[in-house]
Image (tube, rainbow, N blue to C red; front, side, top):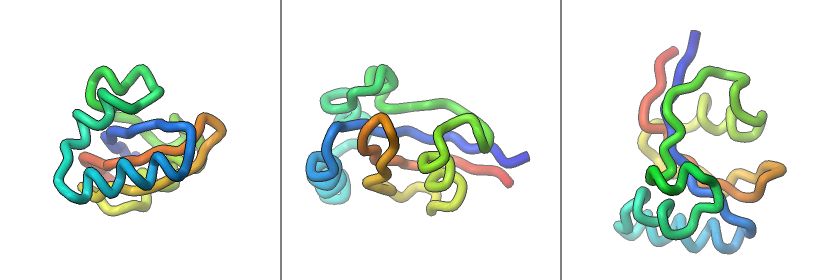
Length: 93
């Protein structure tokens, strides 16, 4: 069964998500941005969500994590919680 580890940043607006993504792509540390900006409690751990399997996260999140490129910042991904930046840190099929 597929498994993935990921970290994420949750914010309220697409614009904020895009701004943070640009900062990370310009060299800002993902974990530091997560600690500063993420609305999710995981932000305190740099956005780390640990390991999980398909179906454990909301559909849009799952789709990005299990199809997106490992090590690349993905998003904005919109869910009912807001807008996410995701980084898949590892994935096994």
